[in-house]
Structure formats: C-alpha cells, structure tokens
Amino acid sequence: MAAAAVAAVPGTLGTLQVGRARLVAACCARLRPGWRLPGSLTGPRVTPAIWARAWAPAVGGSAPRRGYSSEVKTEDELRVRYLEEENRGIVVLGINRAYAKNSFSKNLIKMLSKAVDALKSDKKVRTIIVRSEVPGIFCAGADLKERVKMNPSEVGPFVSKIRAVINEIANLPVPTIAAIDGLALGGGLELALACDIRVAASSAKMGLVETKLAIIPGGGGTQRLPRAIGMSLAKELIFSARVLDGQEAKAVGLISHVLEQNQEGDAAYRKALDLAREFLPQGPVAMRVAKLAINQGMEVDLVTGLAIEEACYAQTIPTKDRLEGLLAFKEKRSPRYKGE
Image 1 (cartoon, helix red, strand yellow):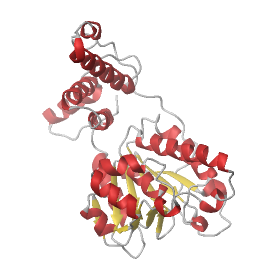
Image 2 (cartoon, rainbow, N blue to C red):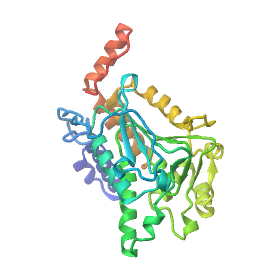
Image 3 (cartoon, rainbow, N blue to C red):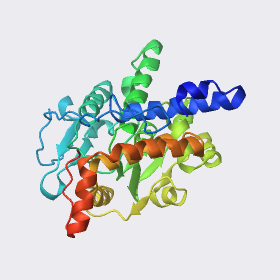
Image 4 (cartoon, rainbow, N blue to C red):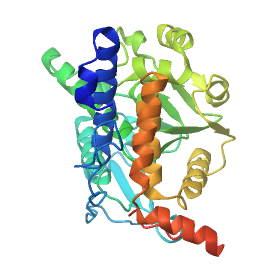
C-alpha cells in the first residue's frame, strides 16, 4: 500500500500505517540519497548512487606510541590510526589524555567530532575500535577541573556537545567496538554504550556515577543503559552510582566479552582487534545496512521492524558485492568485496 493510499485509511489504524510508512521511508533515506523502498510501500526504487564518497584521511596511519607526559600536546589527545596489511579497514580511535584520566575536555570533544565526521563518509572503513592509549584508564567522563571553571550558562551547551558527539559515534554506519582496559566512568561509559560491542578486562571499572555529583548522566546514559541491560537494573545502577568490574559487567550483559588483563594492559583491545578481523571479510554494504536495520528495528514494533528489514535487504540486491558473493560461492573461493 502506497503512503498516499495509507493516508486514506480511516481511524487509528490508518494513522499507525502512515507513521510506519514514513518511518520506513526515513530509514531508507538514511541508506543512500535518492533511494526509494521497493514494491508497494513507496513506489519503484531508482538506480542507486555510489554508497559514499572516498576521502583523503587527514590523520596518518603512524605506528602506535604511548605518551604519558603532562606536557602532551592537545593535538595528540586523540590518535586516529588506520591499520594496514591484514588489518586494513580497521580504524582505531585512541584517547590520550593521561594527565586528566582521558576525561572529556572541550578540545577532546572537538577532535572526536572532527574524526567521526570524517570516518562516517569513508567507505574504506570497515570497523572502528575506540580505546585508550593510557594504561588503566578508558575515560573518566567529563573534565571536572575544566567544568568547575565554566559559568553555569556554559555547562548545558557543553554537555549537549558531548551528547551530540556520542550520538555521532552511535550513528556511525560501520561496526564499532569499545575496548575497555581500565576505568570507564560517567561519560566514559556513555561513550562505550554508544558502541555496538563492548569488551573489557576483568580489572576494568565502569559505572554511571553522576548522581554522586547531584547530576544525571547527560551523554545518553539514561537511555542506552536501560536498552542494554533492562530498565530495573539500569535504574539500580544509576540510583546507586555503583561501579562494576569486568566480571560483574559481563554478568549483567553490559559487555559482551571479559578478559583477564595481560602484562601490556591491552587485553580488551586485543580482543576487540580479533572481533574486528572477523568482520573484515564480510560485504561492506551488507554490514552497513544490517547495522541500520538492527538499530532502527529495535526502536519500533515488529511489523515496522520487518518492513525496515525488507527495505534494507532491497539495498543489497543491485550491488556488485552480492553478485561477487554468488560467484565466489560457485567458484569455491573467498569473495573479493569492494563495497559497491
């Protein structure tokens, strides 16, 4: 039934169907500009455009290095690394504010926003890992030393910027993995919650502790934590400002994997890298629309979710990758996907 026809359906049912059709259309619009849903939902689908424009990375793929000096330059507070060889397609965002426990400053939020803005339009990126370059710390949340110097009128807008950046990370089109090898409190846990998958060392500590400061989580924590572990338990953790270790976080479903920490202090990162390598061989377009279908479908009823899935599946049909997958299966070889 076309959207116009649905509008003619009387009563509550018609209203729901119109809303459903619009939601699915909006979902499809996020896939590629100019696309339409297949069949009777919104009319014929037009020829697809290229998925995304390639771009020249502004940050090089230099080898990782750790700096713990209080004299670290502000441009080093976020390190963007494009991995090579068998890890090509994996991008690592490494937070590096050791002197401030990787807390969110104005500068760090600005750098995160710039990096995410570039990554979301790079079709060569397959998976993004968010980690810390500082042993024992993932992110301690907002920089309270900077916060205390702000006028009350500045606090709200700054928290809005943090929330916006975390939302941008949540909306990245490719899989994202948070590697929690240390402390993740407040906004740090909210950053991890915005990632698709979370892995942590057993020694890691994580919690939304804002109520201790007479405030509430402001980076999406009140919304994403209940969706991750359930409303009742999320309320308990937020009301108590309780901090969990890796094993406790795994038990409540906050993280997917827990590892014993190694001597290098990067057990969670290594697991995240293993997971990212598992994702690399899959069809890039399929990975993107699968993520979109899951994310959008979880926010609606099942019937609408199935319509979203149909719309997303339709976007894979005309791709060269789908034909390559069939040919590789026939020839009994590994497919060579190009994201087209």
